[in-house]
Image 1: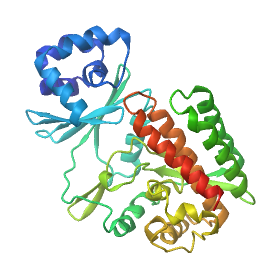
Image 2 (image 1 turned 60 degrees about the vertical axis):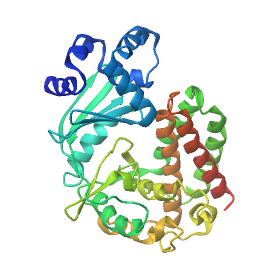
Image 3 (image 1 turned 135 degrees about the vertical axis):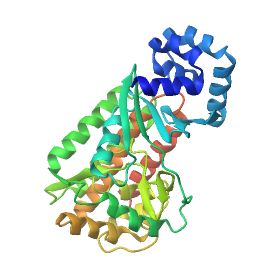
Length: 355
């Protein structure tokens, strides 16, 4: 940890950072960007902002999301920032522990379960209320987009759905009890999205009841949680996957569900109740990969999935993305982005109910 601190000190300004390090790593890198607003830190933040270097870094991060100096790149991210040390080919990911409590665990699990896919971890530690993971820097050889994304996913899904990524069988009642307990906490503690929580919760309960009939069990696997072109790297004709912060042990449909989550008017949601997902290969439904994905799960894990089981899994995935992102966006800085996600969930649930 000491070596990591020295590296980042050097990147910013050793003389400035060292005296204040006991005040908390997060104060220096994150609070001044507006990630944490506490009265106790205001004096320190104001003092740091008066120093030219810090003022430039934090102002640039806040307005553009990027700052570079002496071979280091500082990139603003959700609930934290990323420091890229080009010279030593390392990445320092720093996130708020309160808003991202599973960050270190998810990155370590990805490294353990998917060692040839996830970035190698050199070190991880906690300073103040912030988690830090030090990883290898992976260089992109190709910029990916949604063009031919279906072909990419046919190569990427088998990396995630493999024997090394063990599947967990859970009873439906126990799983839904766990989800509902989380939803109940949101109803009581949500500070930002109360206008959505009741309607989303009501829709989820209706859909849980509709699709849990005759379904005894569900399955969970370690999922990426944000499997998009931005988080997939092509290197030497192989695929590497980064940023597992939003992942975890989730419903087996989670990474597939996400492929249509930002396309709320897709047939996936509008005709949800009528679709036979185990047979469907239409491009408007998960890029035409529905049949492929569920067949892969059955083949790799030796399980048998019914249509109701799949639909329940997809609805549970929507509940999980709601629970995870309700927590992640509980800040003034990210409120607007959080609203967009809540609106998507609400719209999709409404479409499924009426499908």
